[in-house]
Image 1 (tube, one colour):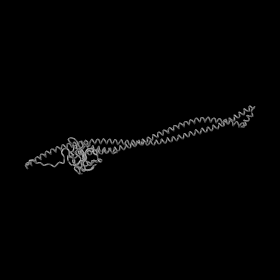
Image 2 (tube, helix red, strand yellow):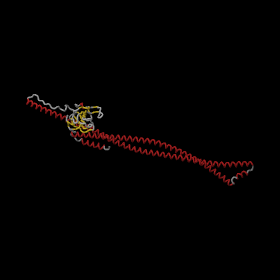
Image 3 (cartoon, one colour):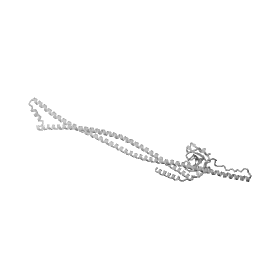
Image 4 (cartoon, helix red, strand yellow):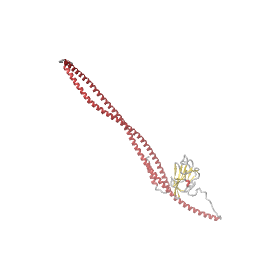
Amino acid sequence: MKQSKPLIATVAATMALSFGLGTTGVSASKLNDLQNQQQQIEQKKNELNRGIQEKASNIQANSEKMDKLLAQIKDLHGKIEAKQNEIAKLESEIEMTKAEIEALRASIKELEQKIADRDALLRDRVRAMQVTGGSTSYLDVLLGASSFSDFIDRVSAVNTLREADRQIITEQKADKATLEDQKQQVETKLASQEENKKKLEAAKADLDRQKKDLDGLVSQLEAEQQRLEKEQANLEAEYSEAHEMSAELKQQIVAEQERLAEIARKAEEERKRKEAEARKKAAAAAASKQAETNRKSGSSVGYTSAPAPAVSGGTWTRPASGRITSTFGYRNLSWASSNHQGVDIANATGTPIVAAGNGIVSSTGSHRTLGNYIMITHSVNGQNMTTVYGHLSAINTSKGAQVSKGQLIGKMGSTGRSSGPHLHFEVHIGTYGNPVNPMRYVPL
C-alpha cells in the first residue's frame, strides 16, 4: 500500500514531461500514455479501496472484541462492588463486635473486681479461722451464749454466716465460669469475622487482578484500534489523492482528444481542399483527353467507367463486410455485456477492417474485453467524434497516423472476450465515453 504515493508522483512527473510535446504522432502517444496512467491509477484506487475495506473490517472485529471485554469488565465491576459491600458490612459487624468486646471488658472488669473482693473476703475468713482454730470458733460463739434465747440467736447468726460463705463460694465459681465463657465467645466471634474478612479481601483481590488483566487487554485493543484507524486514514488520504489525480487525468485525456479532434478537423479540411483540386485537375485532364480522343476517332461520346468503389459516399463508410449479429443496446446474453455499446459485424478471420471516416488514430492496444483495438478521433462538420474497432486479429496502423475513410487499418479476429470472429464497432459523440447507436451515422 505504501507504494501508491511514489506511483502517483511518477505518474504526475510523466504527465508533466509529456505535455511539452506537440506533433500529431507524439500527441497520440501522449494520449495513450495518459490513458495507461489513468488505468494504473484506477488499479491503485482499487487496491487502496480493498485495503480500506480490509482495515474497516479489522476495526469492526477489533471493536466487537473490545465490546465483549468491556462487558466482562462491567460484570467484574458488579462483582467487585458486591464484594466491597460484603467487606464493608463485615467491617461494620467487626466494629460492633469490638464495641461489644469493649463493653464486655468493662463488665469483665466489674466481675473481676467482685471476684477479687470475694477472694479478699474469703481470705479474711480463712485467716480468721486459722487464728481461732478453724471451725471451733463457731462452737465458742454458741457456748458463749448468756441465755437460751441468746443461744438461738447465735445459732441463727452462725447458720447465716455459713450460708453466706457457701453463697460467696458458689457465686465466685459461677462468675469465674461466666467470665471465661464470655471471653471465649467474644474471641471466637472476632476471630471468625477476621477470617471471613480475609476471605472476602482475597476474593476481591482476585477480582481486581482479573479486572487489571482485562484492562490491559482493552488497552492493547485500543492501541490496535488507533493503529488501524490511522492506517485507514492514510489509505483514505492516498485514495483521495489518487481519485483527484484520476479526475485530473480524465480532464487531460478529454482535452487531448479534443485537441486531436481539432487536428483531425483541420486535416480533413486540408484533405477536402486537396481532393477538390485533384478532382478539378482530373476533370480537366479527362476533358482534354476525351476531346483529343473525339478529335482522333470522330466519335461524339467517349466514356470509361471506374471500378465500383468499395467505399460509400458521404462522411462515413461501412468498416467491414459481413453480417450484423448484434445491435446497439440491451441484449440477453449470459457470456457478454447486456448493455451493448456498439454493433457486431461477423465474417471470417482476416476480413479487412477499414476506417469508417477520415481522422487520426488516437489509440491502439490490447484490452481484456475488447482484445486488440483501434480508436480513431474524427472531426465531422465541426463536431468531434470517436470510433472504436475491437476484437482485431491484426492492427495495420499506429498511434498518431492520419487515416482516410475506407483505408485499411486492421483485420477481423476474435481476440478479447469474443465468441467468434467479428468486428465490434462503436461510435462516440465527442470523446470516448459517450456511445451512440452506430447505425444512426454509419451506413451499415
